[in-house]
Length: 326
Image (cartoon, rainbow, N blue to C red):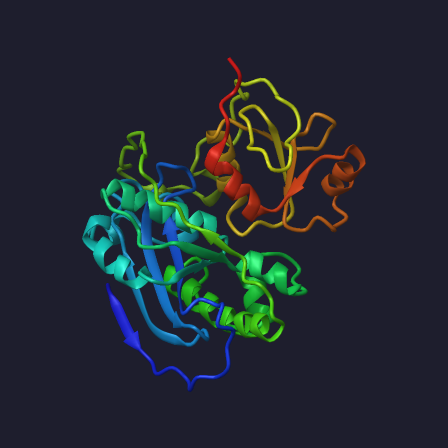
């Protein structure tokens, strides 16, 4: 279940002294995207300052609940039954992260899931900074068709073997991160590092284990009804740059996202936001990773002056949604 391999790093070369001295490229697979969802597998590739692989590690994690979208991550209740709990692997996971910058694709999501698991274990993850490879690809101006991991991998000629398997996703990201890091160093590009603040409080709602598991459902039916109830909060208006989202805001999505769209929309609904299927003058915010595309939603957003943010920024905004008035 656990793996650990070490490889020799290449000889040192000139490198910006302002850059971090080590990275932990991370991928976690989860039961979903909500605040009470759990990690079911985790992988870490430790890299040195130049992006060379030092070692890697992988484990499954028993979430003590239904594993969620099995058709995405492939991990069934039966496979996870004998896996360690997060508290069992927390110390080993911490040694892989300590003193390094956490690197992930849509890093705010991975960090939030990790931080919540450590909070449940009454510990703190030893991470102080994170780097999102979506943000780095934008800083580098990479000509990607979208911000999916598979597109970043294809750009650098990295072959993806098992999409949504934590170990392979972490390997792919590590292999794509090294040339990205080299390009940033060569161009004197500032790395888009963000602070990681550990959680001090958390809440969960009880989630029953399902006897049949979600694996018994078709991919489109693991949540019985995709039609969501009406948002109970009034629309407070448009999102303003630099301010938090507020419950009741109408959020629309356009184009590809790095995580499953349904799960991302569910997370927005859970935060008290209204997920809109179209753009109107009442739309508070459009989330898209390709604001220059010619999709109908992007065109209408431009016409109406609707604010636009990318998926990574939206994930950050979801961390602190203001309650509705009254």
